[in-house]
Image (cartoon, rainbow, N blue to C red):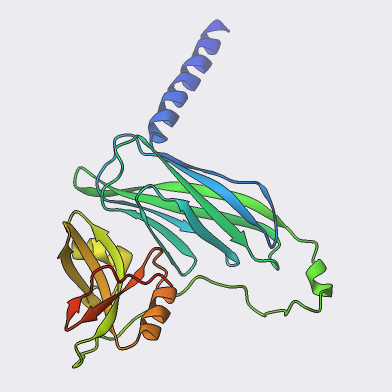
Length: 256
């Protein structure tokens, strides 16, 4: 009997070590299990990365009708496209744990069981690696009182994050135009890294200004065209810059 007991202890001891090794890297998403439709909630995303460094990205798949907005991104670039939120780091922070804060907004018509899931991608020993975020389930509660409110116009579809916006390169003859800046880093990005931010890399222009590599997309004849692209590209923090005589005008950033 004691022999069997020792075998059980050995099994669970080995299983515990194995589970710990398997879960050396993991992501915690802290959010309420029950959410009221038509409201906003703050969530915490904790990435336990240990000694992983270099280029990395966190991809989260969101239900239709749920949107995410950054509060604290720990130097990451946030991109939202096709119900996917991507946090991208050219160089991960040195801390073993990355703490992100965000706000999620839930459509007022949503109800029932929903889930968020995703993956964390990184480079280890020059090889691409990833680990799963797992499934984060939650329940959206809805009393549907809005159906009796005549001031609320019912729409057929839930709002979705923007699909990838593609622009066609313009050969402008005029010397004055606008571009949209999508990123700026101390290190130069490769085409593969750029494609994580915006897939159509042929439309991206690189400039080295004030010790940074700055990346812009354009050209746009009018500021209205530039605004439309900025607001639809899904790249959080993108802004408009002006060019005169084919040169960038400093200190003329436009965030509208």
